[in-house]
Image: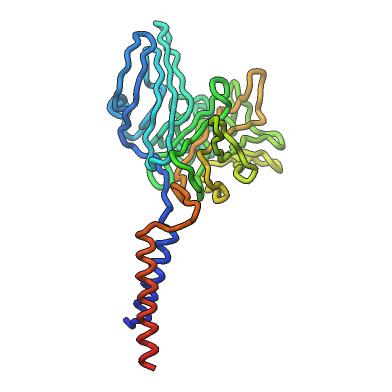
Length: 326
């Protein structure tokens, strides 16, 4: 290999390293997070490892099903993610009335539920999915995640929260992209409906996810910018045809710069007397950060500088040798 070829390769490789130096990806994992459980009946506080606590859950099904915590009244928060800059949180509660256990949750869940939506299912199979709380509820419509089995499911509870769900960042961040999709439960409700939800058959029927990047003001309020908001059609009946998102859709978030987190809003055309009839669920995966902690000066890290200097030095040496040879 000639000097010219060698040093050109060094330069190109290290330039690529510079370009990718700050790229990190959030990927839900199947780690065993510690969570704090508050028993509202007894007043006890218990710290447990979640995966061990839910060890009866089959390994190939749901990794973390927040509705399985019962029979006592409790709340629980905490979730570990692949990138420690992004923080998933969830709230779980259950009440034991002796003969009936009421349990619910809102926020985020990490799932491995592999129950993909199949448009070729029979009418009975589609109907079972539309009523499938506890199974299809935590299943992403494509089946598994983008790069692994695990992915994150969110339930937006508009009745007990501010009307949106949040993904918080530990440090202000610049983003690149995210992958989103329907849950199998929501897809079935949109496609065939059930006792409460109406199938999308009218022009303009829609189920829309809005992702907003926010910064925090001095009182920790979420402040939005029009440049950092994007809509994703999870379902749209248009030109006589239902367009249902049942694969992972890559969403460009490159305009989301220096944000403290993401807020996720859902909106449906199927609204009844008591609010939305479409189940307010969606799934995300592989959120990619352009920078975990953006630098105001844009100065690269020392290791990156060293690589670039090495590459430039190689080109300089080659240039001098070529000049002397002439």
